[in-house]
Length: 342
Image (cartoon, rainbow, N blue to C red; front, side, top):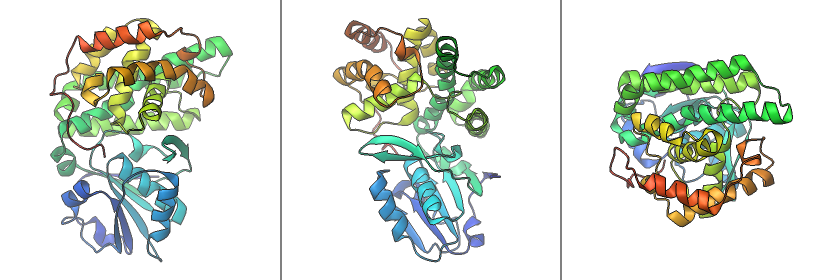
């Protein structure tokens, strides 16, 4: 059972014995003078490629009592991998909430740029340091709403698969996932403003979504065709994108093919200032159109679960019209942030 610590990282290092920190420059500088104790190593990670993570894990000192992951998705998943490989406890300190990796049990690892999930890591503690999170650009925290609102399109795909293929569908889990969406929308202003209540709400929503995944035994309550856009985009461009934002783009796209209500979806995502429009994320028209057209092929090749992509006809004209529609409106923040993807 993971213990959630809401408030501050201050002094936690003094209780950890021989601990190794896995992090990046920006988040480490936010907390290094407050964590206390003296880590036996501090590793600045750069990516999640499998071979690279093996080298990082093997290079950690021995003996080792705890791995502490501090930062965004890269730092958190790298720390989870190291703890999994070294078979030692972990403590996770997300300094941005752009992705729910800190509460997700599987470890996200890349093989030649493609995301794969394996292993299972249950951290001893998850420390939510309000000061560190609120010091980050708000955009990086608002992005975390994408990994909750994705339940909307994921649930549609799951029910569609039940109707078309007979896949088992749990109405109770689906209803609980819908309540997460309702709460996300109810607390939109708090999440947008990254208040303490907004932070706590987003953490609770991330945790509950992953709890539902664990109960279901599959990612259906949260992940569907909207995530396929994210995977297809990164594969084609060979670039990394802020997860929740690119997933938000995927939500808009697949909502068009699911229920034709992408404009309502855009209104909701604008409510918590999720930067989901392609230009917000530095995605060009050619990249956008190619990724939309690549989704069906990617899903089939990777043998992903049945979704709207298996029945929808997606043409270049569809992709270009979606681009034009997204271009016709603007987000509520300056576009194309120069902040690094962490």
